[in-house]
Length: 138
View 1 (tube, rainbow, N blue to C red):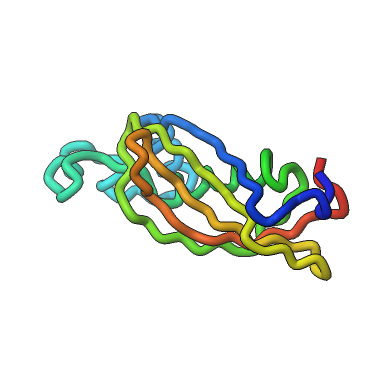
View 2 (tube, helix red, strand yellow):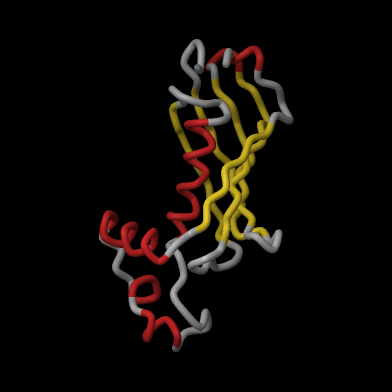
C-alpha cells in the first residue's frame, strides 16, 4: 500500500484467543515470571481470581495489525502509548484494532489510535501509535 492511498479514518483489526500456553511462552520469552501470570494458585488469591495475560502480550497484538494489515509489511514502529483498562484472561478472544488519526506526509508517518476489546465487547486496552512507512508498503 502506498502512503498516499492511506486515509484518515482507515481501520484494520486482528483477533486472537489468548491461551494458557501463550501466557507461559510470553513469560519465558520476556523473563516476566510475575506469579500473577504463571502461578494459578497465587493468582486465584488476587483480585483477579485467576491467571491473567501480561499487558504487553495484549499490546503485542497491535503490532500484528500494524505489521501485517495497516499499514502492512515494512512498517516501522516508532512509538506506542498504552493504557490497560481491564484484565485479559486465558480463553479471552481479543480483537486489536488500529485507526489512522493523522498523516504526516513530509515524514511518511502515521499516528493511529490503538484499541483492544474482548469477546464481550469490553475495551481492555487503549493507546496511540506512531509508525513510519517505507515508500511503498506491500
